[in-house]
Amino acid sequence: MKKRIIMKIAKRYRGEIVWAICYGRLDKVKRIIRSGIDVNKSDESGFTALRWAVQEGELDIVKLLLSVGANINTKDEDGFSPLYQAAADGNIQIVEYLLNSGANIEIKSNDDTTPLIIASCYDQLETVKLLVQRSADINAKTDDGNTALSYAKEYGNEDVANFLSEQGVG
Image 1 (cartoon, helix red, strand yellow):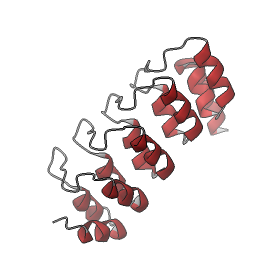
Image 2 (cartoon, rainbow, N blue to C red):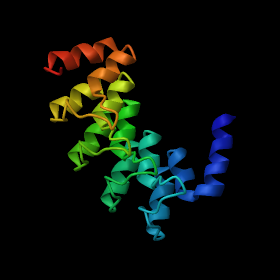
Image 3 (cartoon, rainbow, N blue to C red):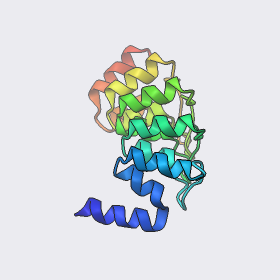
Image 4 (spheres, one colour):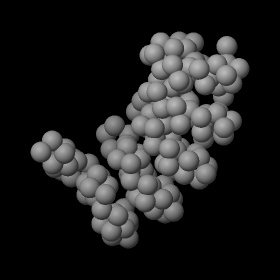
């Protein structure tokens, strides 16, 4: 019921492509793209079709959108990028695909939070490992001076904190 209400709102206020993405309708997204829609147009929150596809975990739609020129490093009003969202969600397949497609691993939100820091906050150990393996800056700091390790400790994410400590983070 809740999903259906959200989808009605999405279709009404954010357009048909968001509705199709939220329902995982790859065929419909393809048709909408063929009609000439600007895939980089954002809604009032700065969400593009790519950001919606990442948030909904729709890897095939992510691939399609990138293949037609979606901006991989676009940010919403809070400075959250598609990679940031995928890292927060722990969607390792999408994180890996975005990185392989050229996403900026060090992209920062408005408060200087990186994908590694947000993955640490949300206890996404496998995502943290992947980002570190791909050379994310383990010493990056937010605008208030916190690091991935300090947040992992603050939120009680012991496995993430231990892993980061093993990497030589202070």
